[in-house]
Length: 100
Image (cartoon, rainbow, N blue to C red; front, side, top):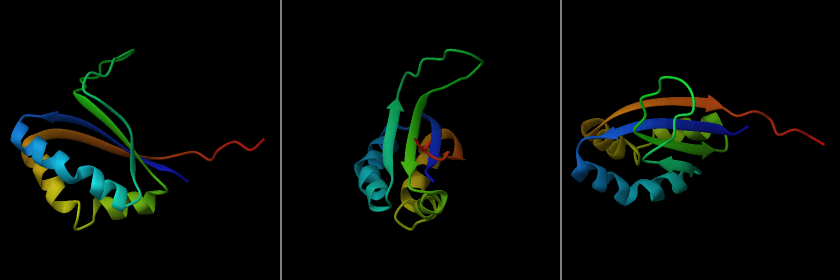
C-alpha cells in the first residue's frame, strides 16, 4: 500500500536549498520514491494553515519510505534541510485502491 511523505518547508538559506536540490531527485528515485506535488504558493482553501513550500512524495509502502528517510544517501540532504529551513513533516499510509 502506498505511503506519503508530506513536508511544509520554509527555506531561509538559499545556498543550502540549491545544494539540497542538486541531488535530491536522484536520491529519491534511487529509493523508489517520486514527487507528486511541490508548490511554493499552495492555495489554502480552509483552515488556519501557515504553509510555505508544500511537497508530497509517494513511495510503494511505508517500509520503503522509512528506508529512504533513514538512508546514508539522504542523511546529508536531511542535514542541509534542517540547517537551512524550518520544516514540518508528516507521513501517512495510503488506502487500498477500490476494486471494481
